[in-house]
Structure formats: C-alpha cells, structure tokens
Amino acid sequence: MPKNTRIRQQVQDFKDRPEAAVLVIGGGINGVATFRDLALQGVDVALVERGDYCQGASGASSHMIHGGIRYLENGEFRLVRESVAERNGLLSIAPHYVKPLRTTIPVFSTFSGILSAPLRFLTHRSGRPTERGAALIKAGLVMYDCFAGLSTARNTPWHTFHGRRKSLAALPQLRRDVKYTATYFDASVHNPERLTLDVLRSGLEANPAARASNYLSLARHEAEGVVLRDEITGEEFRFRAGTVVNATGAWADATNASVGKPTTHMGGTKGSHIVLDHPALLEATGGNEIFFEHRDGRIVLIYPLGDRVLVGTTDIEADISRDAVCTDAEIDYFLDLVHHVFPALEVGRDAIVHTFSGVRPLPRHDGTQPGFVSRDYRIERSTLGDGVPMLTLVGGKWTTFRALAEHLAGDVLSESGQRRSVSTKDLAIGGGRGYPKDAASLGEWFAARASLAERRRLEILLERHGTRADAVLEHCGPNDAPLNATDELTVGELGYFVAQEQATRLIDIFIRRTSLAFRGLVTREMLEETAGVLARYLAWDDETTRDEIKHAQDTLLRLHRTQLGGNGTRRGLAPHQGSHQPA
Image (tube, rainbow, N blue to C red; front, top):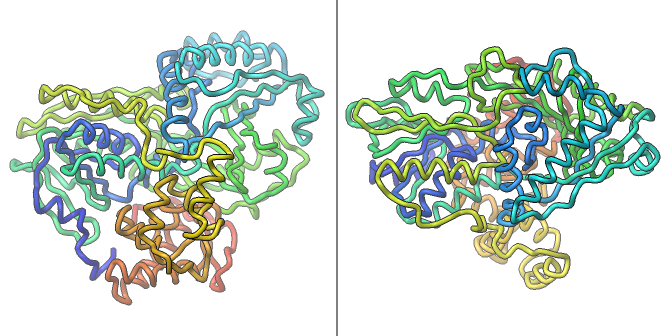
C-alpha cells in the first residue's frame, strides 16, 4: 500500500464526524445508487468501500442495460417489466453512458425447443441442451416488446425477423446454415465504472452532509459502533450509525459475519469476459451485439464496443475467498463460441487485449443451475448487538440499480419514520444533464468550446465525463499538457481524478477512471509517466511511486492477464496465474 500519502480528505471527514444516520457498506452500483437516493432525501448518509468504487462485480459486467429477455423463460415477469422500464429510463437520464444497442439473434432452426421450454420454465433445469428455434424466439420477442410497450418512456424500436437471404446479406460472415435472424433493441453502458462514479458524485453534490470514501472498510462491530479501517494507512477508528446497509454483493455473508451476524444468503457465480482487438470480427458483427445460444445451451454474446469486441460470459460456481480470474478453459470456450457463429474467421489468443471476471451477487441456489438463478433482489433485516438495524441486499442487477435503490432507500427511511421527498425516476444523472441529443446539438457543443481545447480532446472528455467535461476543462485550465505516452490523458485531468473522483492508487486510473486497460492500451511508459504525475498530487515518495507501478503491473497481469513489455509495448495474453488472495 502507498506510504507517505497525504491525508485523504474523504477519510478525514469520517474521523472529524464519526457518526451518521445511515452507513452504507459497499461501493458497487447498488450501494452507490442507494447512497445517492438517501442523500437526495436530505439524509445524513455515509458510504465506505474497501477497494475502489465499482471494483467488484459492478465493474465486471457485460456492459449491458437490458430487460433480460431470457428471464421470461424463468417466469420472472415482474423483473422483466421493471428492467425494461428502467432500461428506457436510463436512456433518458444517463444518455452520456447508456446508449441504444441493436441486438441480433442468429437462429438455426424453426420449431426446436418448443417442448423443452415448458420443462425449463417449470423445473429451472436445462436438462439436455435443446436449441431454441424461431417459433420460440419469436414468441419471446413479441412478449418482450409488449413489456417495453407498457413503459411510458419507451424509446426503442420493435423487433424484426428476417429469413436466410436477408440475414446473410446483412451479416455475410454468419454460418451458412442460418435460417433466420431476429433483431431487437436493448441498451449498452460502455463505461459502467464511470457511470457509478457519476452516480456517487450526484449524491455528494446533493447533500453537504453526505460523505463517501473508497479504500475504507468495515473491520468489525463493537459495543460503541462499527470499526472502520483505512486500507491505505491501516489506521482504525470507531463510527456510529443509526442504520447500517450491507450492499457488498457476493460478500454480503462475509460482511454480516464480520459484525457478528453470520448469514447464508449468497451463492454468487463467476462470470468472465475477454476483449478482442480483431477488426475482421468487429466488421462481421455489423455493429450488432450478436446474442445467441451456444452448444451447451448457455446464452452468450459477441459485442462490439468502439474498436474492440467483448465476448462473454460464463456462469460458474465461485469461491469468494479467491480472486475471480478468467481461466484458460473459459478462454477456449469464448474462442469456440465465436467460431460457432462466424466459422470462417480465424480468432486466436493473440487477439485478446484484456480479460476480466466478477462474482455475481446471486442468492443461495442449492440445486438450481446457475443460469436459472433469479437475478431479482430482496432485502433482509437484522439487528446488530447495540440494537442498530441492518438491511442486507441480496441479489440485484445493473439495469435495475435505480429502482432497487429507491426500494432499499425507502426501507431505510421507514426505519426512522421518514418519507421520500425526491424521486429519482426522471432525474438526470450528473454528466447526462444537457447532454447533446442529436448531431446538430453535438456540433453546437463542440463549437462553443473550440477555443478551450482541440476537437479530439473535447471528444475524449465528452465521452468520458458527459457534460461534466466543462468542469474538467475549468479544473485543467488553458495550459494543460497531455502525457507523452498517450494523448488520452493530461496532467490536469489526472489532478481532477484525484481531487474530484478520489483516485487513490495508480491502477484506479487505467481500469476505472478511463478505459485504457479495457482496450489494451496501457504500456510500461504510460504507467511510469502517470505515476510520476500522481506522485505530485498524492505526495508519494520515490519508494511509493515504484510500489504503485509494480502494483498496477501485477494487477493487470494477475487479474486481467495483460502482460506489458519493457519497451512500452503490450506483449499479449499472459499465462494463467490461478486465483490468489486480493493484494
């Protein structure tokens, strides 16, 4: 951990006033959204996260905001209805990060699966894999569109169905035996980490009493309250709260055990993904997310993101005591599923620029197969030893974070007899306020700022921050300088990440403040230059700076299988390192 680091103001705020009406444990999207909701109601709320914000499952998602068409087969109609409504809402309130996503399902049979689908619906077991045919997919999409049509905020087109000739004309690299393609719209979130940070900032700005800190963990519970630990310095101090919210996802049981209330609510599964730099595969997708059923019956995806292609995902029983890492077997599975749909393309390990894995916060499911475990959520109530109520969130998914937070915050308010005063349903999130809605308004936005920075720099800032780009430009000033190793970062913006977004460690910059690691663009030179700039902002000495470079390099290698060359070039996929305890 960093040494000689200046006192982090966010931690000092907790020490100066070691109490709050509500303490939220967990800085993933659900904990952060609950924090924002409570802050908007005027509640004295505090949030702590043991790592960086969005470091766990929230940052290891499939980058989709979706209604969950496959949940129809599980009979989770309430969840689908809520998810579609929330998807449509996020397209409106977070347009800087949430975009429409055209999704195409290749279909290779007409009537297959009609008999096995009811069995899956009734038993939640897949049995022998049976391909879902056109009739079944058509019925599901009609139902899915009906749910979307019920939403007052519907802003996506209805699905379309095409036969073999039109399908191959649109996607010529598809398997030649394709019979149909079905295309519908969901939504994508290209920067889930940045959306989480924006939700957090919105909460902090809404209420001067609200506080949040990363790298600050819940150590244990004592008679005088909980004990918090600064993960950077190791210092511990007591903190009292009127209500505690456990939003630690797959680690909820471990968190409850740490405060003397052991539970067995959770049964998380590991989901892995790979990111490919493969222009031919990118072109083959035609800009569509390719969403289909693999040979084993699992629903998987090939998803173009900018100039990269995301491939996922697995659903494997997880051991939360070990780091979630994408294995060789999972990579083989991903390359096989690409070949299954685009057999003429040669896609190998040399195209992989990044891998990532996370543990889904699923409820305990015993004999139920992972793919059929509900993605819905529930809230469990208990009482700590000093009589403080604790609410534990079990489950939840990215798409429904706003509605989930509204529910969880409502339960918190009920604990103290308070009532909701502000709705988040139509409330724009941070950099989504005033975001350009069309080409004309986008052109006007760039023209109005042409004197402040070059066009490419403005494009980077708008994509990364939404309309908060104005605050970044003001912070950086007219004499800001780009780094030598990349024109996607400047000295001033690194200072903004520290001052306004609590960037604390070197790795925070590449995985969660930017998408540089995701796209496989991090080099040794970039690590060293960025560390040198951060050292000035965070008061690192030479030893700490070297340690941070090593920690970032090790994290990229161990958790994301990214190997950096000594001359600044990426050396490709690293050998599988196995799972280890967190650093």
